[in-house]
Amino acid sequence: MLKIEWGPQGAVVIEGRLDAAQAAAAQAFLDGVSGSVVLDCTALEYLSSAGLGVLLKTQKRLKAGAGQLRLTGVNRHVHDIFRYAGFDQIFEIAPAP
Amino acid sequence: MTVRQTFRPSFDALAELVAFTASAFDTQGIDRRLLPAVDFALEELFTNVVKYGGSGADIAVELRAIPNGVEACLTAEGVADFDPTRASPKDTTLPIEQRQPGGLGVQLTRQVVDSIEYEYQDTQRRSRVTFRKTLA
Image (tube, rainbow over all chains, first blue to last red):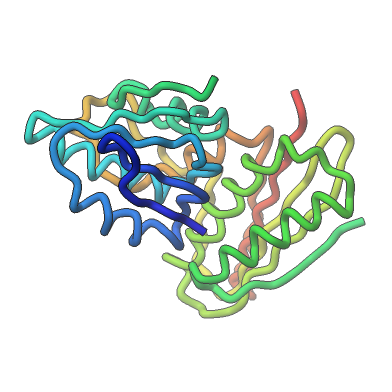
């Protein structure tokens, strides 16, 4: 399951699994985000290529308006997927401690 | 011991696939540190069949413990011949302006697993992908 909502201090908090079954719901939420936003991934357990597509589409739109998504609290699996996909070059990513 | 289950070819079956995999890991004593990578590879292979397979037939997944890891096998019938071990990679070094969503699943699967093999039987149009993942 996936939960995505506004959290404290204007961050978006994403929890659970961002997979093909949840991608549309995540995209629908992120389509409403504008400017520069922190995406708190502390409780994001898992991400597949469907999730990568959601994040890339969002980042492209935000960057076109001089904004961006900054990802924080990224776990090892998610960080590995980002690196393999080259997303560590197009997102600011702060890994989980 | 191999455990096997079939799944409807639908994204809605992903939760069931995840639960099956986690249970198989537990019953066979497979190290859970391998679970994210195995979940990833199974999801990518499974969703490819859902998106491009077209037959509507259930997809079979088998899992078994191997020394230091796991072997997984995904079988689909009535599908076209598509070899994930030979799919052309996308350039992941392009700047964001030149990147488009999609098309990375198979490529990333090849990176997260140790080995991957593909077989195709023309008569039944049966595709079988086997991969292995072990602790480094």
